[in-house]
Image (cartoon, rainbow, N blue to C red; front, top):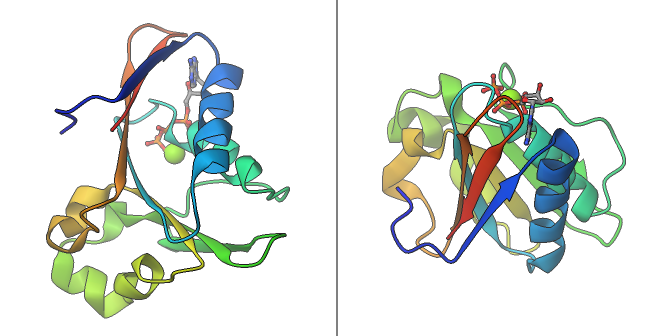
Length: 144
Ligand SMILES: Nc1ncnc2c1ncn2[C@@H]1O[C@H](COP(=O)(O)OP(=O)(O)OP(=O)(O)O)[C@@H](O)[C@H]1O
Ligand SMILES: [Mg+2]
């Protein structure tokens, strides 16, 4: 959970949430990991699309629910690893899949949905983003 809140914003549209993702990505250095939490329909995919755009990715972005990871080459070199661990049961299954490789790439950015599936091996310096549903069009985004 997000206890030490550094930044909290309320977005009022899909576009504003996408912009929040864009701005976070643009502010990060290679090697960063972002843990993205939120209920179904909170806006994780919207935020992820903005995050990818902030790294210069122009391809379509959707959460890799069935494939677990989607890799994108970045125009500046390095990669974005977009992970959706919904179908990963625990750390053991995560390691069997090879998630540690994505987390450890010094040139890569890891954006991890459902990160608590592998809570034992998450990078301690990862940035936590939580999206909460306030109303039909409002979301609270906390970045720690
Ligand atoms: N302020 C807002 N920010 C983001 N999305 C919003 C906002 N207001 C309304 N929406 C709508 O909420 C939905 C968010 O969907 P999205 O697919 O991003 O959620 P998700 O967290 O990825 O859900 P799931 O866990 O089912 O994949 C979209 O239909 C979007 O248009
Ligand atoms: Mg989604």
